[in-house]
Image 1: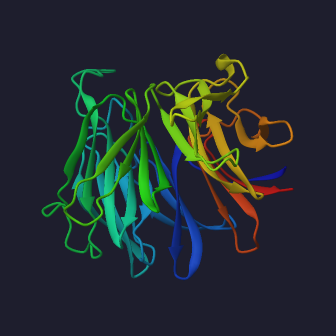
Image 2: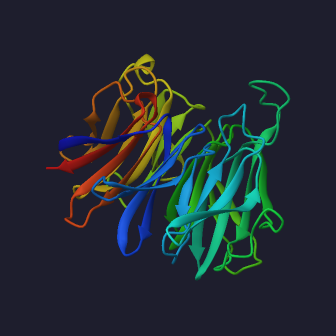
Image 3: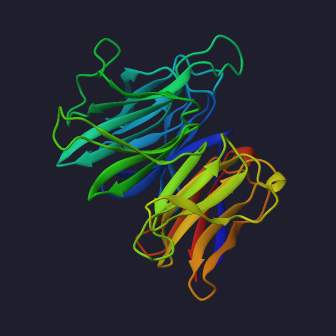
Length: 354
């Protein structure tokens, strides 16, 4: 693996990333954790617009399916101790500017996603906690909500908000979220202190969501992918909350997840594991992981069939402190990784080649 890094911008405490198809171009968004801007880039890393200058508090952004540049984003979640006024907003390009409207107020909303099943889009919303009365108060566990997401969002604003339905409560430190394929449709892999859960949308609107616990250990983030090629999906898990333990679990003959591999670097060097993305890169199932303390590195984990074990390669050696990463293939067929390097305020574009 060869890596070419290009710093394409600086953004104070840059945090959230999302792809965006806009005006026939493949673009991506970068937004900040604190009260800072959201930028729009072309896929080659050229900044073409400032979507907003504030407020920030952006943990998640997702394009509205089928739209030309419209997306949803969290707003005013500045951290576990400052998220009571958080919401999900709708950003819509209009006449060279960006219209921002409220979809719904959701205190402590941290992650969300849009899942499609049977041609219907569902919004799933994960809240880190449900309240607090003082700093570092974790007495009020998080919750997960769901709703059908209408195709037309023009009616929603502060006075008319999308109604959410509680799917599961008592989810302490409800932090992890990954969109996965499960049973031939979109699903969500959600991680909290109680473990990792798969949320399957209803088969038809108005039906019940299906919730399945797949791992019973504290989970900050998790991904699901068949890394070793045996036809069964592995679980890659960061534990505990903002933790320093990085483990891959294998599904055994009894359909239970058991530890298969643990990242060998001393845990003092991998504090606050946070950035995570699973995808196919250079033709291999790959888990990208970065951390915000210790060496603050970014690695790619793949299965080595000859050795019968996992191997790691460095995308960025140290000192960056990635909050989030994402991968896409550009128009030239190159594997691109975008890093929101929060601790160094860098927006980085990594080109990955053989």
